[in-house]
Image 1 (cartoon, one colour):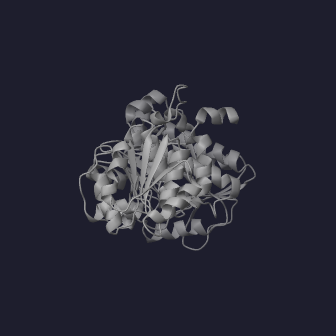
Image 2 (cartoon, helix red, strand yellow; image 1 turned 30 degrees about the vertical axis):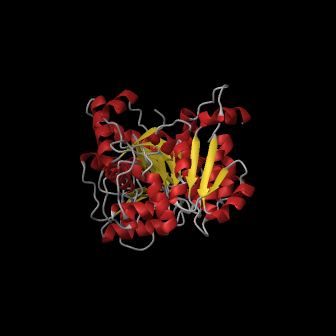
Image 3 (cartoon, rainbow, N blue to C red; image 1 turned 60 degrees about the horizontal axis):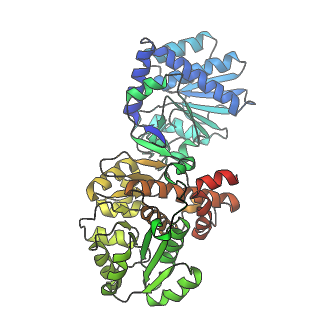
Amino acid sequence: MPGTLLYDAAGVRALETAAIAAEGGDAGVLMARAGLAAWRLLQRRWPQVRTLVVVCGPGNNGGDGYVLARHAQSAGCEVQVVRLDTHAPRTALSRSACAAFVEAGGRIATFAGGPLPSAGLVVDALFGIGLSRAPDADAAALIAAIEATPAPVLALDVPSGLDGDRGSAPGVAVHAQVTLQFLAARVGLQTGDGPDHAGELALDALDVDPGVMAAAGPGVARRIEAGDLAHWLRPRLRNSHKGASGRVLCVGGDHGMGGAVMLATEAALRAGAGLVSVATQAAHVAPLLVRCPEAMVRRIDNASTLAHLLQAADVVALGPGLGRGAWGHGLYDEVLGSGRPLVLDADALSLLAAMPRALPPGTVLTPHPGEAGRLLGAATVDIQRDRPAAVRRLAAQTGAVVVLKGAGTLICAPDGMPWLVAAGNPGMATGGMGDALTGVIAALRGQGLDPESAAACGALLHAAAGDVAARSGGERGLLPVDLIAALRPLANPTFLETWR
């Protein structure tokens, strides 16, 4: 199974309990390792820093901060611990760590508003994994002071104010340059608001035996990155033929929206589809053939002329530029009634939201948060508040594999564990990117991948291509055609490794 397991707060606590038991019940061992790991990362990442402000909370996250502060002070750094007057250590471990810091000559200041002391680095050890609400007024003021500092910020475990399970910030939250996670990676740091707040991610397993970790819990999601593409994209047999690589039918392109179905078509071909047919309006036939002569383009005036194309298709990509008028609605009904494997996007999702119906087994849906909200009868902000829950709920409700697009794209099959795509960039927030994704997933489905694999691999391939395209010219101004041009080498991992 490709990828790395991600955990929520409950899962991390289970890992911590198992790890403490493996250490003979001594929880202090893990805190000592966490503080030392943070100090060592600080030395590697900011070797020039000699002045630190460490913001400590009342729990064990604050305890980790006290341990780090003690190591820094012992190394000759000027260290100032800052905390709220209500945030004296509340756990036995954090009290012990605080006492050791003070006994070593450490100073603790109470935050009473205003800016933090000047320092070369601020360490955020205020809140850990458990915060799932907006911080209270005093804590919010302290977080705002961290935000206002010109110094870089190292967050321990989770940036304070960020919900590490849901990937949302219910109130003010720290934007860290680096976040060091302990024991296991957090799902909420890698989707929604998480990446902006967490910055560069680091992980230290605190020397816990991998077998202990594996036995403690299964995780709540699986993170995949570009190197995992080879799990799904194997070299083709020498005796392959175009029919064995999948017959994809792209349906869409109402008047004024022909570009969308063109992008889906070209992406399907670049992702390896053997044959791609297109059902579109007459006005788009000639332009599409000029742009993509490999496609077999058909003028479709009404749904009755679509039947022969559906019979020949292994998979249908429905929605790019489809429209919601009579033409698009008629094609939508015809395609969904055909029983063919489907990838639905854009207007097809809007039609489904307006008139819910049972979907053929193995259907793949690719909504952005707004479309997901319409399908679930929820506001977009509610989707973004808890993206992992939203993708699971939508998969269960529709019986489809769902690709919830956005920062930290999530893919989930009914009753399955979500996949999280650790690739992609803000330059992909451009019209037409979703049309290209539809074509990529349809192509992989046509090449024999099951619906969940096609969705996960397709979303990863699409995002990785976006990153390749961004590296060659930057994020701003990135177009779907740039991404499509980068698909081919990534879709051939064996070739790409040789080429590099």
